[in-house]
Image 1 (cartoon, one colour):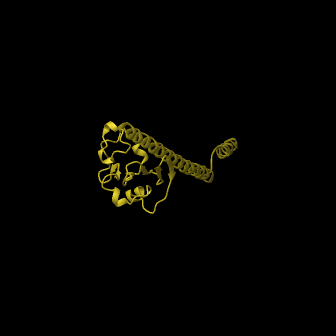
Image 2 (image 1 turned 90 degrees about the vertical axis):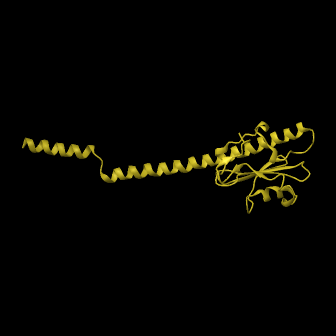
Image 3 (image 1 turned 60 degrees about the horizontal axis):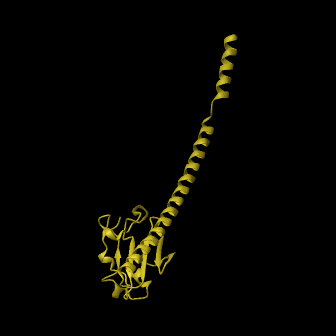
Length: 178
């Protein structure tokens, strides 16, 4: 009898200290839900950070480009086709969509106005025109729409002033981009 009581006590003790399969499944499901929420939140935060970086880069680029214009004494922007490493343009390359041309620069025919548009890794497109950065949604993100922001026809400007910063087929950036 003594062995039987001890056995029952052991069985009862085991049941009191263990978890059932249902309890374990509930814990796994709760952890999976929390992980999914965390991943979605992280992706949203990353997208916002990349968008903010692109906006900052546009402002810094436009400021540096305007400084170069002012230092030249000509009162006009130099052609983006003539940029060099010495022009000191910096971009956080990981914040940009690398699957396509991701930044377009356009100077109007008179050479005194600048438009820049860029696409973030989030897919958001931003434009800098006359000192203001806005988010915009063109039907097509391309040099033509960027140049059209200045009011001059794209065909007249494209030979000298429309340029993109990355080389899409090679996944490399132009050599003057730091």
